Image 1 (tube, rainbow, N blue to C red):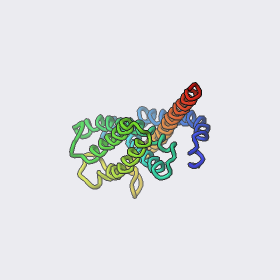
Image 2: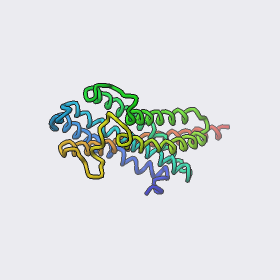
Image 3: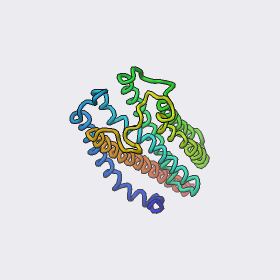
Image 4: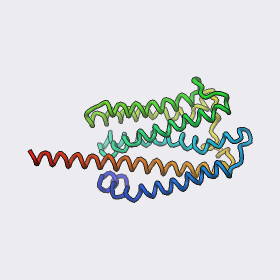
Length: 243
């Protein structure tokens, strides 16, 4: 399947159907999750209504890490097999992943103020490692923009993206390895989720919607990049003919 979609023409054909379906399904799932979180789910026993922000914060945190892993995976594919579509995917994932990471940090800070009594804690490993993730996204985007030769930019960004993967397990396990204000994992646990079903199911539905939204945004950005490349090739062809 991946080999089939590695061809830009096949990707454009498949994504023309996949993009609107992804956006429609994402709107339904995210809308349902937010409706449940705001109006149906009862206040959390300890944190009250402030815990409702988890329906945005938690999916944003998951997508920020998943997007980075996808970017690193695409970078690896380009680095080994030189599939240009993989580099396009990596370049398109970066700003979307950065946006989700920024949402994660912002909502976490808003949630932390009434819960922990502070907007930010520099000695908290979870907070700092997520901030590093945002810097990684921004650094990769800046590096790609700074290097004028596309192949050089692709190679440098691929190496940086693959090296940055080491930060992902640090984010995930920082609350277990270090003293942290952040609560321990309540969903992805060896002994099963500790979150009550009335919170868990709408959260998982919303997270699924954000996965589809992220996929739709990435495919849309990739389609735009491919269109621009096709236009550039046509312009060069016309210029060569006129000369």
